[in-house]
Image 1 (cartoon, one colour):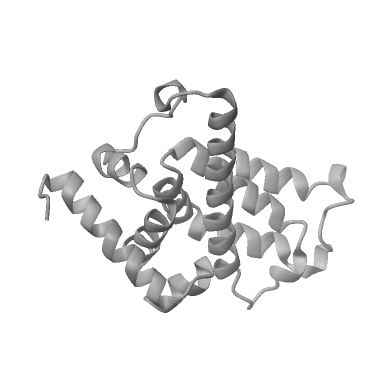
Image 2 (cartoon, helix red, strand yellow; image 1 turned 90 degrees about the vertical axis):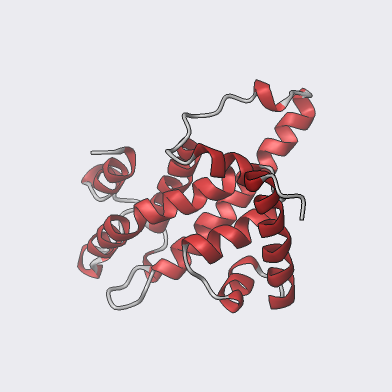
Length: 183
């Protein structure tokens, strides 16, 4: 049992009755199903944005833990995946902002920041880390989650034209980094 599963189980127990949804609501079942189906995909999506699998796992865990406090989002028959995906993207962006602020205040270099072991495709994650955040987010949503330009625009809160620009520029930089082609 991992940390998110233990949180789900512990928050549904009697010791946290203050935060526990009504037992007849089916929230625990909906949350468990969403967790089982979406967790791996969401961790990978977040890892592509933040560049760190361990941090991505924390972000996804935190999103699912927060869902217990919002039972109106977890009714059976009502999809929770769009909410969860947007929350993971937003939390990933927030984590990057916090890290940037911490680095600025501590005046550390990138080498000073402890990174978790890389997933199998370390070269791609390293190249993604060199992209600006918006380009990284757009590429992760487009090519990992197969989102349309309009879906990406809605998720990130930007125009479809901006999404196209971020995708074009990000792919060009990735191509240059990974292939060594300056075009």
